Image (cartoon, one colour):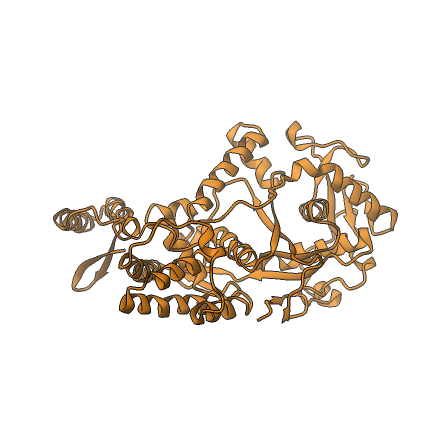
Length: 463
């Protein structure tokens, strides 16, 4: 079966053929690295890690670029607040990101460019746009892209220029020819630190966000490449603007397939610090192992909205345990990368799994095949079926731990101690010491024990 991918640009699933036979070039917008990554970021990076893993399992060579935005207003403010340089802040946060996403099995990209290392390429692209009359400098020193001079703006997001103008609620910024025009180069402000300013033909300043991704992707993948991905929230204006400036500068098609992952909600509401439902990856990994979090993400189709909750985490852990329990019933040597290469795709379970993944990376349907195969393993205790179960899981970044290591995680705390801590938490709640009660609940969750409160009392279960 031919791999089909849903293309946001055409709004349909289409057969995928890379521009260069056997080689897929993929760019995904990465993090603006001023703080710890949250679970919405984790969902996005896991989605495209899954894409890369499946492309490679399908025999493609993949050049995967995921950038780091390390120059931005938020980065500047945070560095100034902390009294450190921009590089110190972004180095610290990049290291934290690598640690956190590594814990959920996200593989490193082929290239991880930092925006500040590609300023010359950005300035070159801006110069080409200006020479073609698609960019202009304002009296204040900014350089803007002239949106109305680019035919086809709005095609990716399905927005017309008239619709966009009708939605305007702000006055035109000084020097802009049109409210829709976006910045390519931002003139430096006198109050900004020296390491936030770069020399340019337009005066000291820094690149706009949109031009960063265009310059880095074109430099590392070529002016025309296969797949560009990111969160649904980037479709407009970021990706729309990337298309305009990239095609405008090169007079070539930019990207063949645009992919966008769905939003993540927490308890059916948008994640927000103001709603007190905002979680970093590090927050969640204090409560549950990284593989369970990964499983929670990929058992929902990457384009669908995903609801995050304690109950869903508990269910994900229990489901993953079922698969590991099947593997635990058959002795196997340690997992290796060769296992995936040795899969016989003609075997019925493998063929069904492949058919699901080839249908726009339908991981939920593929996981259903894993459970069918796990049931077979439980009945037959056949080594070849257990090996296939583990290998297919490996294409998703799952089931590679020794089964007992996963199954025994969180099982060390004794029941008597759990009951004692529950009683202490109940006492704290009676005394209205809710901070202490929450601390006890979190401490139990960190050891794999989930509490459920009801009018009848508190019950617990291991996750």
